[in-house]
Length: 188
Image (cartoon, rainbow, N blue to C red; front, side, top):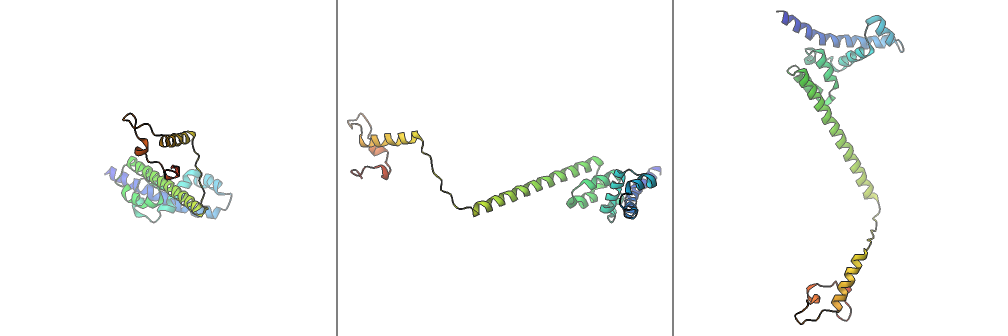
């Protein structure tokens, strides 16, 4: 019996946080600029951090029945979740331990950050593609390496001066076709 009363009071705590948050929002409007911190300290004995959390809970969860049955720590955890998954997590939070909810919120935030990073990279890639599409074509010149020139020179020399074909050497002219632009006019 006592545990039932404890659970009822525990549930009322989350509901009371939301109700207190609603009233703090009203009071903040009423006290005017520059008087808020004094009001919190003198009238309701709340720290600015606590008041901020209560008001955030009221703004976010005032009209969401599943949340009023949660313990306060879970309500505060839900405030840290990305908005796009907050309702889903709130619906499941009653059946989760605090640790499970913490992990779910952490994972949701990690996935949101990955999605934001992927979106940023895609936007950068699109911008780069637009830039390249609008750029005039470039002529790319190739640097010829000394070894390549030497290799072609040796190939031309061997083609012009084939080894004797008495069975001793190979006929390079037959094995390695020479590009047409390198064939002397007399052989072409």
